[in-house]
Amino acid sequence: MSQSSQYSQKVQKALDTFGLDLEVVELEESTRTAQDAARAVGCDLGQIVKSLVFRHGDQPFLFLVSGKNRLDIPFVSKKLGIALEKANADFAREQSGFPIGGVPPVGHTRKMDTYIDRTLLEYEEIWAAAGTPHAVFRIKSYDLPRITDGRVMDVC
Image 1 (cartoon, rainbow, N blue to C red):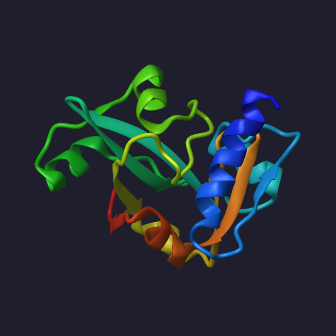
Image 2: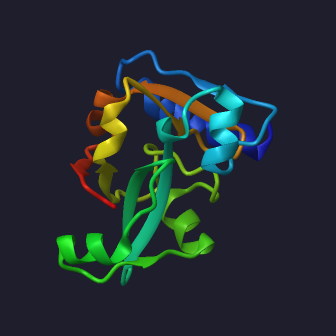
C-alpha cells in the first residue's frame, strides 16, 4: 500500500466515525489547489474547502476557507485576539499528519482549533481534501461544523 493510500484511508476511517456515509474519492487529476479540485470534481470554486494551517507560537489553528475566498489574516488575528502566522509545510504536516495540498478537515495528529468560513454554508454540498493531492470527499455544508467541532465565522 502506498503512503498516499494510507493517508486517504486514515481520512476515510475518521469520516466513518460520524455515521454520515461520507466517501473518500481518489482521482487521477490533481486536487492540490482549489482551482484544480473544482475542475476535477466539476463544481464551483466556492464549493472547495481549502484547509489552511496557521500558528500562534506552537499552537496550530485550522481554517477551512471557501475556494473563492482569501483568508484575511490581520482581520482574523484581531477577531481572535492573537497574532497568527502561516505555518510552513513541516509544521502543518507535523500538526495535521498530512502533506500540504491534502490536509483534510478531520483525522489530524493533533487537535487544532478549527474555524470555518461562513460562506461555505451558502452551498448545499462542498468538497474537502482527503489526505492527498488526489483525494477528496463530498459533504453537506451544514455537517462540516459537526465533524470538525469548528466555529463558523467571517474570515475575509
